[in-house]
Length: 218
Image (cartoon, rainbow, N blue to C red):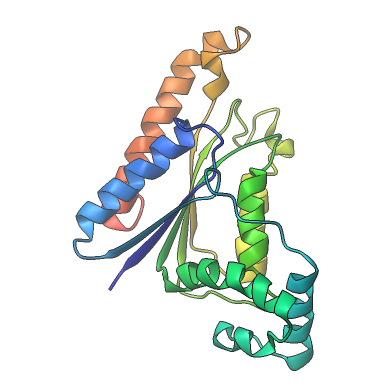
């Protein structure tokens, strides 16, 4: 049975990334009746940062050569490690159970929200591979960072996530949906670009619907 894990990380309760991820999830669930769906809002309910006990678990996995997540709990020994594992275990279980991982991720300061990075840190361990999973990132950016634009070199949002998924999870089935130029609504300097903002949003929503319904872009 298919399983969608849906994360949101925007600090805004009503945001473009939330709108985009919600549209994908709505269409995906309609196209997969009976499929499992898990939702986690890491902005509204942030996960804690990793601490010393997390690093001890990580070191023990390396020392023991354990790469299968099913064996991770075997290295948890101390009360502090058990406390850390109590945070890790449900987050990791959700990730491992999912066939599709949908992440609502606005760009903050050229990169991802800190709340999303906290989640990534908690669920990522050495030599951890997640073959067969698909990732969809529903992004929103205040400006435009598309190839060929002046700000393309400072896009550490898509580039970071793409490199992370490939380098740490060995996952290359990643689709990015971007609603760009969102600051045209509030920044007078960008207001002339509002038609481009609208076009970007509409195209991102349309692509999300097609991808969710068909399992591919068309």
